[in-house]
Length: 109
Image (cartoon, rainbow, N blue to C red):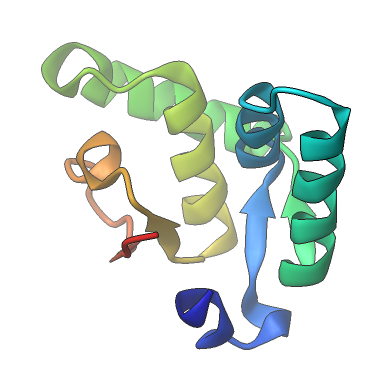
């Protein structure tokens, strides 16, 4: 939590796909409630893929899928950050390290 606290609330965004991945990992409805509460309390905005983000994600896949194994959801997450001009905070550095112009903030949970 110290990592998140170091960034002002108004500058904290998450992609809806990240929230979906968290929900997908839940084992019961109580965990889903915890995830939703966490997102509401810790992020000022949730970025949803639109046409611009989707087009950028397709270009990222064309460039990085074969060479670096970039997957669809990660491409959409990276495209969201790039489109919004935001840094991407992740523990999964290897999924995004090859994407040029993507500013990555590495952290450990």
